[in-house]
Image 1 (cartoon, rainbow, N blue to C red):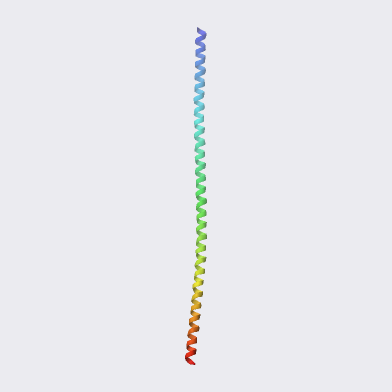
Image 2 (image 1 turned 120 degrees about the horizontal axis):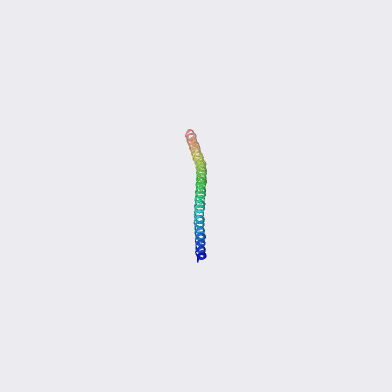
Length: 105
C-alpha cells in the first residue's frame, strides 16, 4: 500500500512539474508571440511611413513638372499673342502707309 501511495505522490509531483513547465512554456511562447507581433507592427508602420514619404516626394515632383509645363505653355501662348499683335500692327502700319501714299497721289 505504501508503494502505491509513493507511486501516486511521485506521479502527482511529476504531473505538477510538467504542468508548471507547460505554464512556463506557454508564458514564454506568449511573450515571444507578443514581441513578434510588436515587431511586425513596427515594420508595417515603418514601411507605411516610407511609402507615404515616397508618395509625397513623387507628388511634389509631379507638381513641379506640371508647374514647369504650365510656365512653358504660358510662354508659348504669350509668344503667339505677341506675334499675332506684331502681324496685326504690321498690317495696320502698311495699310496706313498705303492710305497716306494714295492720298498724296
